[in-house]
Amino acid sequence: MRDAFLVFGAPLIEEAEINEVVASMRSGWLGTGPKVARFEEDFRGYVGSAHAVAVNSCTAALHLSMVAAGLQPGDEVITTALTFCATVNAIIHAGATPVLVDVDPVTMNMDAGQVKASITDRTKAILPVHFAGRPCDMDALCEIAGRHRLKLIEDCAHAIEAEYHGRKVGTFGDFGCYSFYVTKNVAAGEGGMVVTRQEEDAARIKMLALHGMTKDAWKRFGDEGFKHYQVVECGFKYNMMDLQAAIGLHQLRWVESRWPRRKELWNHYGAALDGLPVALPPEPDPATRHAHHLYTILVDPARAGIERDAFLDAMTRQNIGVGVHYLSIPEHPYYRRVFGWRPADYPNAMRIGRQTVSLPLSAKLTDEDADDVVAAVRHVLEGARGAR
Ligand SMILES: Cc1ncc(COP(=O)(O)O)c(C=O)c1O
Image (cartoon, rainbow, N blue to C red; front, side, top):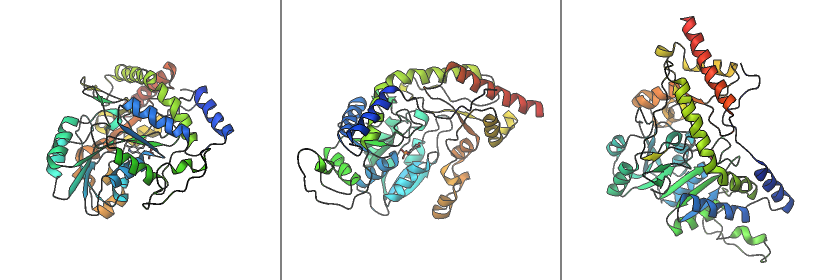
């Protein structure tokens, strides 16, 4: 067993990020400023979108996208039953009603057939999540959105590097939303980004992210002299700090060089865990580029001889940090109480949520770390077999 605990999702931070943060601290410009503007420009260029607006989380990015999409109370937004709670909470905060669909049992992404079947005359938007970094079926979702004139808001929290048929995810819909949370492929501690084609949407999101104050209010303390601002909408406090952008700028510079390392780790796990009594994630579709954000195995107690939660505990005792992405949304009491959702009505998301285990998949992992993860999985499964 390894000596030190392997932290799940630990970011790889280099001297460049540290120096950039120190430079921001020394300059005294900590809040929204020139580094945020540069990060937006670099991100826009990386994704290939017309506009990018930085905010302080992906949750904020999703919320503001839905406000900018013009959702009204009673409007329905179709999303997946297998996602982080933030996806659904953002719909609720925007005043709309979330409608869940089950996932495809193999890809774990929202089932386009069920999206089609869930459309009512109140449906206004579709909110797909590119789960684990695997692109959703964007041909099908774009076709449905186009035919029914629905807004398409992509949750790309796992999928910064992902491409579908040669095009970056996040650029298919009206809005693409990204996370720079500490475990994400580009980590800034906290942070988010919205990309969009429409200049007026970008301008509105920027304004809403800073209290609803008029454009470039952040410059009011700069060397161009004090500028009066006007509050033109009741906005939010969702702006990104230069301190976050200082980290994000360099993380984005590394993004393409770290993706192959996570892909290598993904392939290593695939080869080393093959033949064990757990289900491994399916191979990426060759017509897409998987962002390799999460490596999820499924622990079915009938096959593995161990309950999923016991497996999580046993891995932790082996000093390997693991994750669960995610218990299906209807498993949580709030949603059951308010929307009456039942886990069994979304059977694929329920089964995956009850069996899934995410293994560490950070570019920070050494070959020895990855071998320790594999050894721990083998050890735990062998122990379970021995106990039968
Ligand atoms: C699929 C998904 N959507 C949204 C979010 C929210 O991101 P943030 O923490 O940046 O608000 C996350 C974060 O973990 C996520 O995994």
